[in-house]
Image (cartoon, rainbow, N blue to C red; front, side):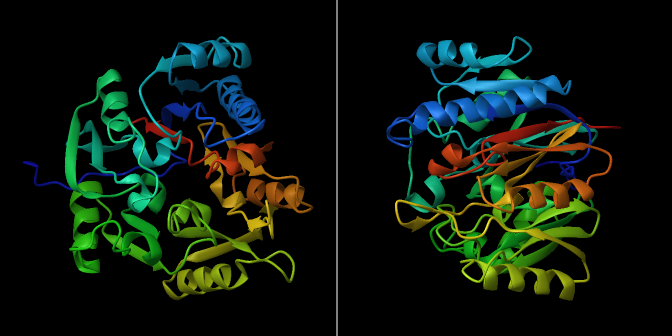
Length: 332
């Protein structure tokens, strides 16, 4: 890029223009009755955001899903038809930064989360959404998914070694190379490296399932629920690293051990979405749902916090944060 100034990536709690949300359409990802249930849960998420007064853009795949979505969402929601594979727009959508007082949609390489899930449209949906929104697009030559990073808006970011240092993403890049790229492309100049992400997370440990900024220098990390919590050691390690880095750390209950078909699911309340007026927490029918929503609500006294069912969405591999991407309001 020609500019000598670093870009700025806003914190999620800063003002937003709208929220893009992906609408489930692939029966192979949500078999049986899961697709219909996931659609209902995503629609409830979209409706909550729209009813709060924030513009909401529900991205749908085709005419059939346009009609289905139209049955489930309110009239305030913009239905945007696009070609995409999976719904995880946090990873495939545009990451919008401010540079030289203008908005710029950054696009990175995408290889299906390390070659595991390659679907038609997922490599192009980010640029398509940006261009339809009238945003200039800049393409970077390395692989990065939006759910792999979180920022407090000051140039500080958190990520995991499991994901960003994974050889299935950028095998020729060192940790120093990745830090330099995060600085030049997104203005992220201080990086807190956590270790592993959640057990069985298809994304190889995205940080938006593990630790989230809730204020400048303030990180929220789950705390193990129950003696059989499969991620107890991972949560404890993340909190310790954040404290050693000099951050303020708040804890909230984890979702504990949640299984489907005998396999542990990467269920996480940390996959909450911060919108202009709401914080929306995915819930799973677990005993600690209410306590987790209350604990997260205490971290956002300026917003209303609600919990919405997301168990069917999770069955497809992600949560509400994974399925959405915010368009920041870029202030001069």
